[in-house]
Length: 261
Image (cartoon, rainbow, N blue to C red; front, side, top):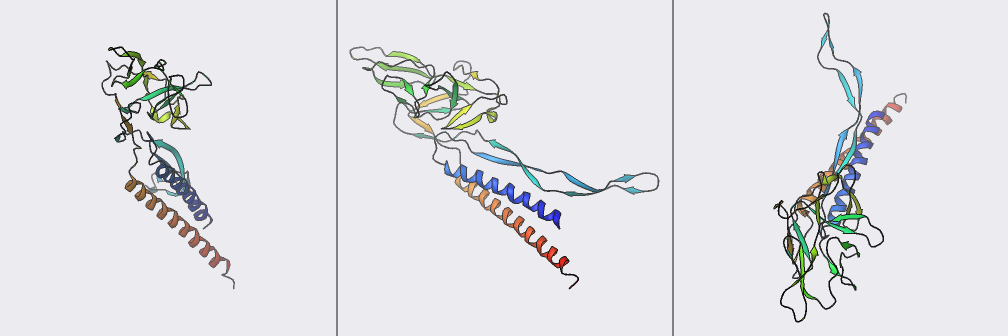
């Protein structure tokens, strides 16, 4: 019975982490560019009570093994495409395809990556994120400039008073990763490359037509509320049944302790 107590406790811990992850997904249902995650599990080591035997005198094709529970093995981020929602703001940009905006912190030269394209102009005419990170590849826009547009290939243009031809202000840089699930989440809709994600691969709009930009749109979170609610109910029931096993094991221990009465 002691084995059952410890085994069920691992199940309760695993389902608690699962519910925590589901809660995080639901909390970010309106976060621009958010990518849902799921918890993956693995069974723990097994205790061998009897080995399988096959010799001249004895044949026991199956051994006797007892599992010792479950453990969370990974949190997998799902980078499926979110819905594109119109905003009528020309500085809002959504990515269609598997790529990331490259942004730079104003305090250091580190490149970070995001799917959140809700860009703005700061007081100096720089295209920045909500937290003030510079959008890499875009030059400073003249204070007198107006009608800023972002083309599907990332080219940024704007108009100047008295000029018919638009002025080009660079190109929004995008990057792809061999394993985007290996990116480190650091909050603020930002990702940091790691050894698991691989080096950033620059996006070439002429060679790679699987990626495009859509100005005036934002990418919604790729979360299906109904799916998350079903996952929540499943995790809650799994947690509940593990607690029932602990309760049953405790009652059996109580019966064994009272045998001599």
